[in-house]
Amino acid sequence: MKIIKSPEEMQRIALDLKRSGKTIGFVPTMGFLHEGHLSLMRVARSQCDVLVVSIFVNPTQFGPNEDLDAYPRDFERDEQLCESELADIVFYPESGNMFAGDASVWVDEDALSGVLCGESRPGHFRGVCTVVAKLFNLVQPDLAVFGEKDAQQLRIIERMVRDLNFPVQIIRGPIIREADGLAMSSRNKYLTAEQRKNALCLRKALDLASERMAKGERRVSNLRKSMVDLIDAVPEAEVDYIEFADDGTLEPLKNISGRTLVALAVKFGATRLIDNAVLIP
Ligand code: AMP
Image (cartoon, rainbow, N blue to C red; front, side, top):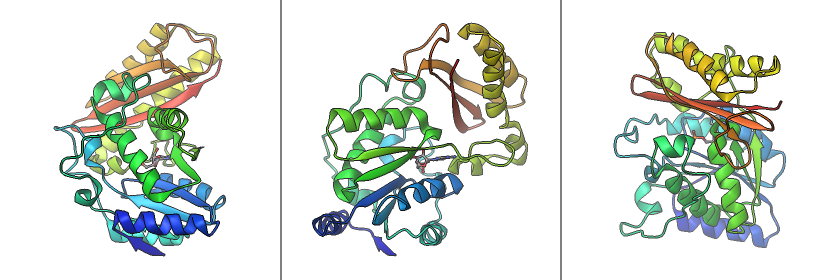
């Protein structure tokens, strides 16, 4: 397994691999890897000749008051995990080498990015789209795997690939959870023992919505209220958003009639967790 830090070297090697007829599978991450990331690597590994994993905490997707500096990092451990998943290349660039000081070109998606996390985190998806576009140019992947955990991000990347004609197949990887149901996240590390227990309310609220829908409830206001009530009863939990959106357009819904993305963000102190489910009536 090779560790590549230079963006230019990454691109040169990727172009050489392509010229020699190899297919490249890609899993972009911000590191501090867990089973969710590893599951994406396994999906990619089985469908390509060369597996590239990137580890880059992208500064442009963090807001000024967010956790960029505190974001957990452990490159040695990440390296071992990538090796155990049979990655061929770990791309581990430094921020200063990824963005020119006077970088002035951005990729902005403007239909799906204004709601949910895009509303709570202005500029976030501009940072995500720009860095993913750059990573695609550097890694030259035939396929890239993204997790359903970040449902809005996944849909925005699919839209970017469609609208800008990136020659990359995007594959969706299912949400990987801890045994008790909490969606795995690098940010779970921030939680105190008490908050970790209380964080189960995200999954419980999603389950409640899907149970009530299965019993016939279709009004979003009713479903949403029961989720808010459940979370409001949990110590320290503060709802950032709970939204029901059309799974294709992410437009907010009043009633459920087709595939619906129910997505939520809940804060525990300074830690913001997200989760989601797709409801199919
Ligand atoms: P991150 O390192 O958090 O930026 O995530 C990198 C990739 O891993 C993204 O495609 C995420 O959606 C995906 N991912 C993160 N957590 C999970 C999870 N629990 N299950 C599946 N995929 C995940």
